[in-house]
Image 1 (cartoon, rainbow, N blue to C red):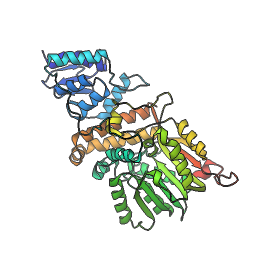
Image 2 (cartoon, one colour):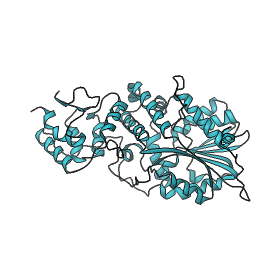
Image 3 (cartoon, rainbow, N blue to C red):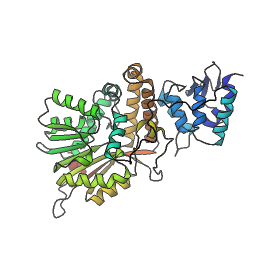
Length: 430
């Protein structure tokens, strides 16, 4: 019997009995809709073993990252179609359950695919890594897993800006307003919200490849310190700072945010960093930044948030936890605001950028797919698949409101309670 017919019950358990996808197998057999944009290709029998040992998101991820199970060429189109089939509040998922397990076992038995648990792809982070969650040592290892995969690889994905956070797109969009201009617009938005002026002292917590500190120094005349836990990011940022003649105004450090004690700073930016902090460390994060900020100084916290009803807990079968952001935690916006206020900050402005991140991630996916062979050569095929899967899936999560991203602008009140803050938003943004 053709392999496709044997795995039909498994495919139906994963995507539904109507099989609105195209399923292809290693022997050339297929089933489902021939015209479907979503193609699920079982390249090797071993894909069944991945799903048998882990009949859930992790098994699917291992099969895909290892190349045993592949999807079509246009990941955004695929995820858009899967989104239409999924429950709106859940999105595309691979559900563990008796039906999936039984189907995988039966297919594996008939196709001679049973055997020991396949070795996970090398891109996977072991679930048991030792050490307490969010210690400085463990946080550095988690950051290194995600960011130290090659600056040239990231340049292919992010473009020349090398900015790895939500861009700021004009409305309505125009053909000449692409990713680079949108990222410059975001950097300028942050600088204006912080009220940067010549001579000010700026701290950028989680500075990435140095995009914001360089923009702030060049366009606003500030002196800046950027801290990151990534050695590769720091090396790139230092080289760029030197090449732009900014070494007298910018210092890049490999340093944990908890080790910064050389304030006061006139302004602090945290752009896409607090997702790595963890809910248990949020009070430490907030009080630490408050202590390093001068009275009247502003903090801009730019972070991804989750819906309040979607609780976070360690999950050994999570694709994001095992392949993308180990130990990452997303909290509701209200939790972040509460911690900032408890630390003494006065929150003055909140701006949601959810739709902007959908557009940004789509641009990154397009960059990766347009330079696929080069991306694989610069890293591994598995790593490129991880980034493709996570960025496409994340784009749909922002578009469907399962994830949000928000800029929270807070001020450290001066003695007597004065906020030293513009009265209107027009004045705030200049």
